[in-house]
Structures are given as C-alpha cells and as structure tokens.
Image (cartoon, rainbow over all chains, first blue to last red; front, side, top):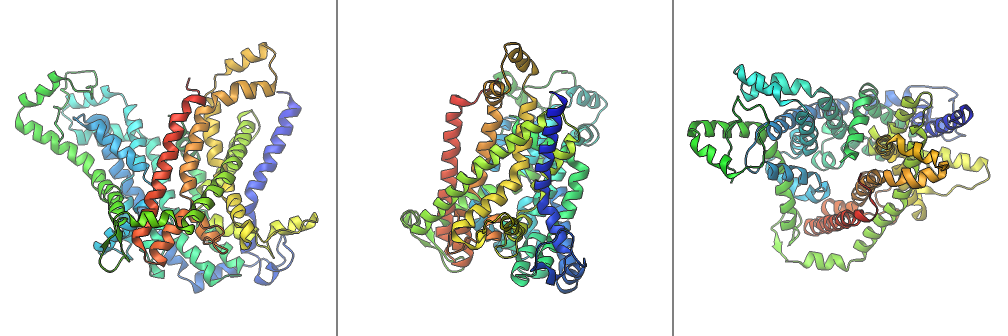
Length: 270
Length: 323
C-alpha cells in the first residue's frame, strides 16, 4: 500500500480507538469531578478535581471488604480450575480407557448448557447444602470448567509423547510425568486459562447475586449494582466504584495481553 | 460401564490408539487384576476432581430444572405436580411473547452492528501500520470489563439530562432522546453498550481468520487485475466464512441469554420495554416465587437456542467455506 493511504488508515483507526477509549476516560474524569460540577456543562478537565468520591466509597460503604471478597473468590476459582482442569486434561490426553471419547464429549456438552437453565435447581442444591449466603456456595459451581479442560488437553496433546516414554523408563509414574514433564510444558495454555478463570469470576454477576445476601459478603459487580440504589444521582461515586473494579482486570490484561488475545483467537479456529 | 485398557507399555514408542479393537480388549483380562485396579484408581484421581463438580453443578441441575418445570412451586412450600401446564400457560402468556420479542429485537440490532463494526476494524488492523498491537489492545479493552461497569458507565454517558452524549448532540443542534428512561430508546441504549463491549471480541476472532488466508490468493488476484473491492468480495469474505459462522453462532447463543446489562441498565423497564427472557426467568423466580414457570421458561429458551444453533450448523454447508 502507498504511504499516504497507510497514514490515512492509521489516523482513521486511531480515531476509532479514541472513541472506544472515551467511555473509560469519561469514567475517570467523572470520578474526580466534584458533585456540584456534574450537573453543569460536561468538562474534560474538571474545575476542582478531588478524590472525595473515593473517600466516600471507602469511608461509608464496605467497599474494601467487597474488593477483598472479589479477589479471594477469583484467586480460589482460578486455582481450583487450574488443578481440576490440568488433571482432567492429562487424563484425556495420556490415560486411554474405553469410553474416554464419550466422557470427553459429555464434558464439552456441559459448555453449551446456558447458566440460566441451571439457576433454579443450583439455587436449591446450594440451599440444601446450607451454603446460601456463603463464599463457598458462590465458588462451588465454578471449581471445574469444561473450557479449561478442553484448552489444556489441546496443549497437552501437542507435547511429544516420547518425553513421557523416557520418564517412564526411568521409573516415573503418571503423577510424576504430569507434574514434572507435561504440566511445565503447557505454560502458555495455563496462563490463558488463568486469565479467563480470573476474569470470569471477577466479572460474574448473576450467580453471586443469587447466593449472597449480606452486604459484607458481596462481590464487586453486586456491590456496584447496589450502589446505584444508594447513590442514584451521585455519578462521581458510581464512577469511582467502576474505576476501582476495572483497574485490576486492566492490569492483568496489560501483562497477559498475548495470552488473552491468543485464547480468544484460538476459540475461533475449529 | 468403563472397561479399562492396560497402561501403554514402556517399550511401545507410538502413542496408544484410543480406538479399541478386540485384541486390545483381551489384553486387560490377561493383565493382573491388581494392575487393572491400580490403573482405574489413577484414572479416577485425574478425572474425578472435575467430573464430580461438573456432574453435580451442571448435569444434575439441568435435569432438575426439567423436573421443577413440571411443578407449581414457590421455592419454599411443597411442590405440586402440574404436568405440562407451565409450558401451556407460558406459551399463551403475553409477557412471554414480549420477552421473546424483546430478545429478538436485541439480537437483530446487536448482531449486524457488532459484526460489521468488528469486521471493519479487523480489516483495517490486518494491514501493516504503526502501533498496531497497541490499537488492537484498546479495541479489546471493553471485553475484559464487567457488564455491570459497562452498564453503569453507559447509563452515565447516555444520561438524558447530564450525559455527555446528549450534550454533544445538543452542540450540533440535535435534541437527544431520553435513552434508557424512554421505552422507545431503552433497547437501543442496551444494544449500543453491548456492541461497544463485544466489538473487540469479534475483531480478534475475525483477525485470526484474516491472518489464516494465504497471501498467494491475493497475489494471483492482483495479477488478474482485481481491485480492492473485488478482492474483498471474492477472496476475503468467502475465506473468512468459518470465522463469520463462529461469530454468528456464539453471538446468537449469547444474545438469547442477554441479562447482566439489561438488569443493570434498565431492569427490563421502563414499563417492560426492555424485558428479555432471562430477566423474566429471574423475576419469576426471585420476585414472584414462581419457580416452576421460571424453569419451564428457561427450558423453552434452551430449546429455542438449541434449535437455532442446529439450524445454523445444518445451513452452514450452503455458505461456509472450509478449506
């Protein structure tokens, strides 16, 4: 392509990117604008920027606790999915048994069942287990992910089996082969699954909304939705809450961009 | 139910096939019983940690929902068997029709917007340009953001009185609508926010598809004197059809299940103008305590999604081009 058209295209794409980014920018600006200025003409640079909204948030709502809840749940979900997912992936990749393909197909089929169909019975199950309004109740349905098993199995299938054989001759059992040979070689897939598991938990809404009742136990998305009732027109506070709940995800995204984008791109290739 | 095959012996260098012939079936019987049991235990140790939760929290509830849907139940008292009555009454309920129509409205507005937007950006970002990875990163950023944040931020952007969108429209002399406070504009507001969030996702999938198209096709077309438009229509779009198919299937499945952004932006209002199926399931269960009807409605939705997906899979031969 000629130089001039490259330049024109770059400018057009950059304008689009700026437009895409504007809602984030506006969220940050609003969060540091003082309440009085909000009702007036919108300003790109607020007259007297202040952190009052953040002070309000951390001073008068259990927001710090809510952040800790979200973080704890996201870390626990990620760890659980990595353990259950990598074990199962090794099983499907390295331990042939009759019916293996059928069992794997059932795993894949669970990915296609919409969460909404499961809500009512899942609610009853968790209620019967006495886990309503607990973090364990939120965590439990998410400890295994068929997507994770699928992703890691694909990666493990690409690890040469000669490596296993060599270890086997040295007397290694399946757990040693899994832990010291196969798992260390599927690092990128583990990274992709970690980011997706963390993101899924951090952003999940419907299930925690149903399970959790006590404000002190709530997660960020629930607390944010609740803030709307409390601070109907105090947009600086609402936007401060949004900024805080987006920052961790954005940081993870920046560091793991390669894996996130690769993960999405791979799902599109059959 | 599951017959075991002995662990591949250390001397075989080729991977053991999963397809099992009669010869291999005989092998485990000859193997020592202890070895077989030990192999079964090893398999259980690897598979059960995921199989048990998946069974308990996906398969059991799925059939549980079917069971509940055949009852009248308020989540607390005794369940009363009503057979298919819940399905029959939902089928003629105007609220159900409205929920399905609104969901269809959402999909019809959202899908073209996000696909054409995603394709345009993917095409632009597929050519060489400075800071390409950075730009791609910006477009993708909303994908990692939670729906609740997206909903809150867009409620503020589209605020009828103080929102920046109506302010900018006012500068060019347009009197902006009431957006999510106006029954006519509630659904378009949700569609706009959703398209903004998902654009990057569609872009990445289409970019991966574009990068898989062999460059020599374009070179041959250039030799034949094809212009840019001709290449787009005759090479790019047909070669991209598997990715397009994937985007459409996924977007339709997600579109039928739209909930988070509706709940947080409008709650289905004003006056039910943006009430979608899943919001209806939620309201029936947790607002009105009609769990039987809610389960029936969720199964109706599941069957619709399944049917639409199967129709697409059957129809793909007509237009999807697998190399």
